[in-house]
View 1 (cartoon, helix red, strand yellow):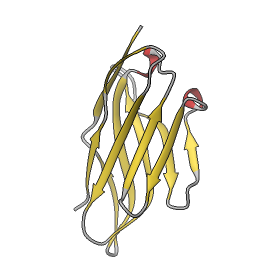
View 2 (tube, rainbow, N blue to C red):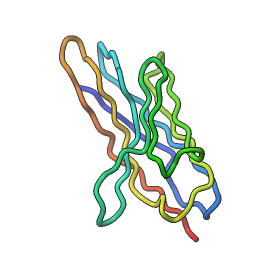
View 3 (cartoon, rainbow, N blue to C red):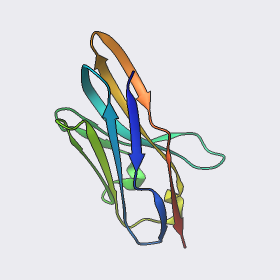
View 4 (cartoon, rainbow, N blue to C red):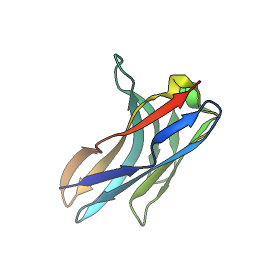
Length: 119
């Protein structure tokens, strides 16, 4: 079983910064993609950014230039540095990881961490 534990959410004023972290644990992990999604009240969950084991990244258009995703393959961790935050970034942010555990494919989610940006 793959577990993802997130940290780093909170309340910040518009223009401020936050850094989210997520650690994956479990035996025999080979993680391909790690990423962050978010879901605001009344809206569908959307992809914020992903990063492959090789370092290729993909971002939601509205966060390009403000958010940076990074990962430590040795520690199975992924981070999301969020700068120039605005109230539209308010949401629950979820960590996601996909890969193999042994010979079994997995697609796991964290419990979510709240990010609130005040105007």
